[in-house]
Image 1 (tube, one colour):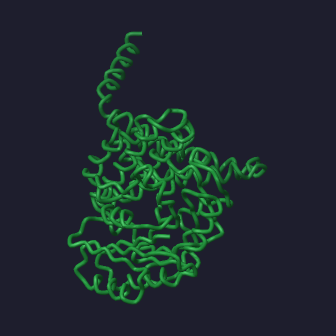
Image 2 (tube, rainbow, N blue to C red):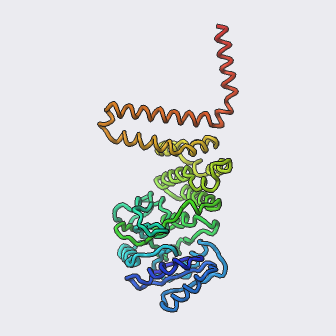
Length: 391
C-alpha cells in the first residue's frame, strides 16, 4: 500500500499524521510525503522521519504547485498495489491499512470505501457523523457505480483506497485546470471507471479534522467547485446511463441552490446576484419531471435560474430557511398517518399552506417578470374600468 500525504507549512500537525502511518499493524507500506513548497520547518520534519524509517519517501518541491499537482507527483512516484490519501492535519487508526488492503485483496476491488470518523480540529472532540455516512449502508462488494448511483454524491478522496493499476489504465489524475475542488472530479472519475467496488461501513479507517468550512471560502474555491460539477455533468451526459444521469441532475440542482460558500464570499449583495447566471449549466438540462422530485426550495430555485429570473432566485435563497421550515412541518405531519385526521393536524397544515402561499407571493412580487409586466397589468385595469363603465 502506498500512503500519500501532501503538505504545505504544517509542521505542527504533520508528525501526528506520519506517526499514525508508521504505527500501522500492517507494515508492508510506503509513505510518500510531498512537501509542496513549504517555508517553515516541514522539510526538516519529513527528513528526520526518513532517517528513522526507510518507508518514508520525501518529495520536496521547491515551489508551491497546489494540491492537484502535489498529489499527482505522489501518485507518479508510488509503487504499491493500492494507494490511499492522508491529509497532513488528519491521521489514521492503526488498523486502517490492514482493513483496506485485506478487503481489496479478498474482493479484487478497484476501489474500497470505509468509514470516516470526524473530530473538531480545535478541541479534538469526536463528532457523531460525517457526511459520507449516508452512503455507507450495509457491507457490499463487487458492484459498480451503475448499481449504486448515489455514490456520485461522495466527494471525499480520503477514507478509501484505489488499485493503482486501474488509476493508470484510465489515466485518472487530479485535474490541474483548477487549483480547488480537485477532489470532486477525481472522486467522480475513479468511481465511474471502477468495475469492482467494496464498501466496509463497519471499519473506521480515517480520522478527519473538521474546521470552519465557510471560513476558508474565497471566490476561486466557489467558482472551481461549480466548474468541477459542470465538468462531471457534461461527462455523465455523454457516457452514463439513465439512472446515473438522473442522479447527477439532482446533485447539480441541489448544489446550485446551496449557496452558503458563495454568500460567505459575496455577502447578500448585488455581487451574489451577478454570480447566479453562472449556475445555469448546472440546471439547464435537467428534465422537468426530475425537478418535481426535489424539495420545494430547490425546485423553485432551479426553475428561476432556468427562466433567467435571477432576482427571483436571489430572493428564494434569501428566504431559503422559510421553505425548509414549511417542508419539515408538512413532511412530519404527512408521516404521522392517523394523526393527520385530527383537527390540530388539519389546522397546522392549513397554517403552513398559508405560509407557503405568502412566501410564493413574496417571491412573485419581488421578481423581475412581475415588474416588467406591471404596465400590462395597469392597462388591463384601465380597460376593465372603461368597459365596466360602458356597460
